[in-house]
Length: 617
Figure 1 (cartoon, rainbow, N blue to C red):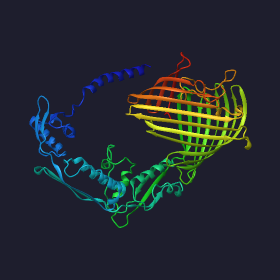
Figure 2 (spheres, one colour):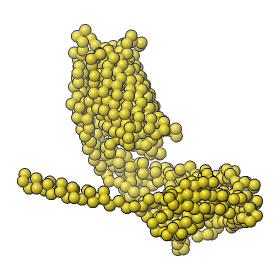
Figure 3 (cartoon, one colour):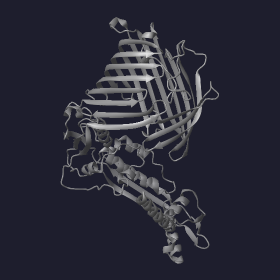
Figure 4 (cartoon, rainbow, N blue to C red):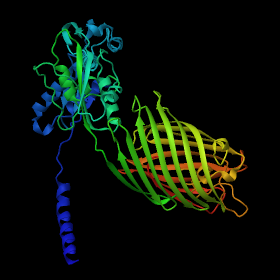
């Protein structure tokens, strides 16, 4: 203890000595500011931008006046002012009095695109949207932007022999005129050649089926980037590298950016919609293509297998279930066909479950697959006791609109006691589900939605112990206004139709209340009750929620909400349970953390705290 105290004391002493010194040393690098008279708008902003990097302490007064005057004139030329009069006052503050003088106008404008790009829509759109015309004042940014736009499009769309055969700006200030000439020759558009894949432990047909282009299709960098993304999403590979093949020893090196800066082609294509990009190494290979009559471009794909066994441990807490622990064992590939196997163990006080999923990908591994799911689950909570085992075989499709359709057949055995009534049932039932989830960004969505609809049917004709039709549906939406106002809406419904409700196990009955249902009420405590006051579960359920969040500072948000809903036996209950309250959200490094205090409207003296970690969906 003595050693620890002495170490802490020494640490405090160093902090007390060093901290004032840290505050005392503040570099005096201040941007130069000036009052500008006689000109405004974009011209004034450009002058200020040119002047702000001047370090006045490095100049004498005479030299400072000259530097300010020189930079001001350069800044004004960008907007066609070539003969301004600039008067500079240094003391007591920097003031610029400007007479802009006459402005140069465009007298002649000639822009031409030749080669295969002549009829390519993005190039035609760039020409059509060019804002300058004969008679307009000379403004250089659109001209420079068009030049960069042409070169960026050429790189993106496979015109690797492109060149500006003419690119000239002639300015004659004494005539107040400018002549602009730009001739862009794109040359031929290269096409995709044969794709060669090396390093794969998965059969090559699987990988070729995922290609986003065909042999002899016009080259498009976005197609390579999308193909890379699709290969990564399979989980089969640790790394994926795709590049056009180098076919000549002549090198035009494109060095990777230093210090994390953006690569040069980011600015070259700034006017274009943001698309996935290929690596600088791939770009370097493209630019070194030998100019010959063969415009087919071989593509080399190199992959590195992912670890065969991956483990993950998660610890969390929620008011509904208390502390919780999750252990996952993921095998992203178990054979050359790309089959995968996942196991998940979840432990909390009211619920324990073990589940497994065996996935068999089909022709398009990301979109089509068979899935075998199995698991056991034990629940001991309030009036519910249940031990359940299930096996499910499913066929899954993912469509181009991101909707996922799953057709499945499930077998379930459940030994349960609900509200004092015990039973054991075997259920065999098919079902179909449609779902879609979209979020951006992933960590804390500022925009997103989730929809899910399921229909299941069981019949004693094929040996099931209960006959029923069960429907569930969920919809959630997240929208953000001005980046600081976040709105959430949720609606959940469920219904089961059966002639013998006592044969329906707790896992298929409906309960409401809790962190993700109706806040202000305990977890799954809203449902019909028997004569003894025990929970029975409902035949129907509806819950909804509206929430508004306001960013307070950085990753901290304040929230207010109202939830309503119930589980019941007949549609149109007289009273839905309603709770409202306020909360705090913190977007932590481990995920969003939510703390709410809710008040149930049917109990004036009750308040309930809700705490959970993780995104809304």
